[in-house]
Length: 606
Ligand SMILES: [Ca+2]
Ligand SMILES: [Ca+2]
Ligand SMILES: [Ca+2]
Ligand SMILES: [Ca+2]
Image 1: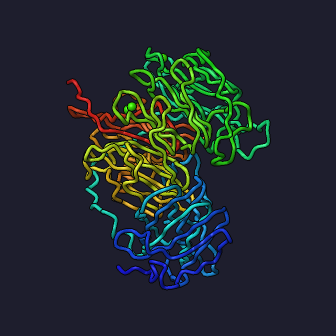
Image 2: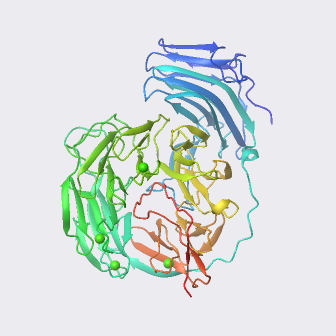
């Protein structure tokens, strides 16, 4: 397939500079080039004025055509906010940029919400920031409906130096997808409705599950949002926990903290609440932040067992919506339960939305804090194997003492992350990094091993979704803003499946107990090839979660919205001598993907 870009090295005059402030110098460089290439474009800037180049030849395109877009870049950017973007902009017949409209979602979005207007279409954009040696940046996209012309643009801003070369645009993205012929669909147990509850005024999109009272049955904990007005002028849309309601599976309210109000059902971020058995007595406690307090509640009656003030606000570096100091203390965003001090989990990480993270031990003592560019949900893993967790903040790996082991700058921010070992046993950190794309890093060093620029990376999740892969393990990933696409990666970061029209979800479901996990949606279960293989009876829309409610080691699927909660289970019991029981940390719950489900089996005593 030929390169449609006739001037890949910027030497033939096809690229036009359309914006160049005084402080920016754009020139050809024959010294700094990747191996085997003679020329690169060098952009030097001493300020913040935006510069812009456009590829001068009109590229005619048709909806449904797929493309590969690759480039090479080296960056020495002086500010963390400085960036460079190579973007294929798709225009309609009137020369306007195409909008990404998603009228119907079939699977969970990997955001707390679904949206119809996903903004300007921006599949395949390649964004970069920071300081990196030559990187080969690969990606691709499908021309959306209404697209007739592609404008290749290269733009950026901020102090530092950038080298770009080797721009390749080729047809047929699927030539690089390692497509496997899907196996015949096995006979999956049919789904039946185990329970449908009509929810009250307390319904919340944030739901946690666990045995709160120790009676062996699962209870539901709904959390509602409030959007308080900051005391100091602020650009941040603050969100806080308004009300918690513990409900049993018959719909009886066990306890409530705060005033319920259905206006607090919806939420566009995480809320600071998790359930976990902190004192290992078989009953879950509730850890939450409310009214500027970190509170540990007993699960039976919601009584306060311990509390302390939330951390003092810190404006941080102003990532996301700006400096997060609208209140004197933080309201709390997400909580990750981890092990920093002991031999089992019970310590925790608390963050604000975009700028700061605080580590606490199980006695609510503050251990350390970190300021940087936060992910939505802090991910944990014992990276160095010393028995305690390291923390991935979104831009850094931090050890249990708060020492930064490595730090990276990537364009955008981290929406979702997972740690896992690849086939060679190397520890990988896979990232969905917004418009920055998807990355596979060496978790020990933070080096980029592989990267894919396929749109706004929203979620990455690991489970045994694909029986054709070793242990069935594969990564389900999706994009969101600018186009909702769905991908499956191998552990090595090869693309096994690409769908530029629908997102089938991400929550892994151990439905049959035979070692294959399905993908949960509100309407049924998809397999790792994008086929709906189990339909739910009389389904309704909603968010999706998974839990063994029934106690037979296989997952039930929980779907809920502001009116109903439904639990779907298998219509048939399990038979076999061993049942699949993947290892997960279900107590660390977030809407932002980051689900890690590792294969494990349990032998059943006859
Ligand atoms: Ca219970
Ligand atoms: Ca307990
Ligand atoms: Ca460790
Ligand atoms: Ca079950």
